[in-house]
Length: 161
Image (cartoon, rainbow, N blue to C red; front, side):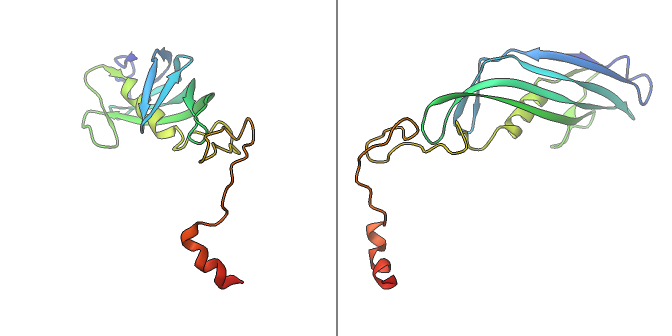
């Protein structure tokens, strides 16, 4: 998503509103594959501040991913705010401003990575799967015999009696 900043670079304090979308099928994130079910939408404002461009706005999209506990795919949505700086001297905290055009795609993807959850859960109280038979415990119970205490810690249980 490229944007011309030629008009706002003329005067300090000038700004312009922008909006657009980026089409992605999937995104890899810490070993998880995120499947986009809608385009990534961005709307915001570009502001000239002493020759640098401040980008503020909002990213919004819907996606499908597998739950970390039960392994079932589920749909979710993400909406996050953006406040980034494009400057002629790129650092770890800024993006590079070359000429009179900026490319927002890397900045948008970076913000998506930063705002996605560390652990994807289909619901907060997901019960996961039985470690013995693999039954999804959200759908039905299983009759597996579960030991409450790790056998290696049974000696400690005896001390508490």
